[in-house]
Length: 139
Length: 139
DNA sequence: GGCAATCATGAGAACGATTCTCGTTATCAC
DNA sequence: GTGATAACGAGAATCGTTCTCATGATTGCC
Ligand SMILES: [Mn+2]
Ligand SMILES: [Mn+2]
Ligand SMILES: [Zn+2]
Ligand SMILES: [Zn+2]
Image (cartoon, rainbow over all chains, first blue to last red):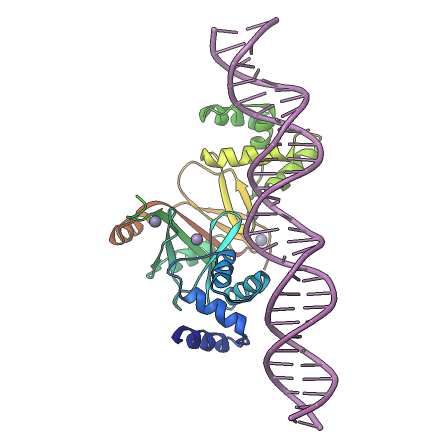
């Protein structure tokens, strides 16, 4: 399968062992249009007969997010959603109804943030913009 | 005390009963320079001899955030921080080390977001920008 | 190709922030 | 005041996530 191979490549690219479980978690996430929680992903994999533990799904998603391979979104209080996105820095527009995700590619915040941080004696380490709304289907 | 009176006014302004507990929670939060969690606020109030339950602190902060009187920030996974801010729309620059908060007042994202949302058949309901960094003391 | 050292996994327990339950208490309109 | 209603407090329950530890895979080295 195509996605399987791509997942292996991504894992090797960040020096993470491409174990059977990690490859399946990442390949499954790559097939998702929208973001999903660790538990949702685990249920999906179990539902199709894969044998792997919930803790492994959590560990894998956390590891991949740390490595920057996937994104962690926190639009729901108390839980994290994960999504496989492109490489470059970007933000998300998420539907409150169905969690459909649209990527916003052209972020031009950095110059503004750089200037303001300096004025307050801060060093900026990152920024997160999440836009919420309602898609056509959910209105 | 001044803050006590202000808190009562804010509560009445959104048609929330100014009970003893609610007034103390809001007044205490108004005295905080940076953001705090429900548990931190509860400890602080108990520490000075106030008798009130943790559940009430959670209920009050949740209610006030819903009413727009205070802001809920989610820069720590798995928990919410609260802060009393000004009226107008704005964003936060938060120090990862000590949680010091700087308010960013001039947000000019709306025209850009409006245009992009329309292009994807979304209606924007809000946006959240959180900038993280390190303050001078924490570097 | 073995073999020890290291890393990853799985099942379930533990954790921690938050919410719920329900009996008691305070507040408000009249 | 008095009754109706809303809020409170203590502790239990919930639920997403992380930890523990025994077991199973992978790797580097001979
Ligand atoms: Mn989501
Ligand atoms: Mn904080
Ligand atoms: Zn939708
Ligand atoms: Zn700091």
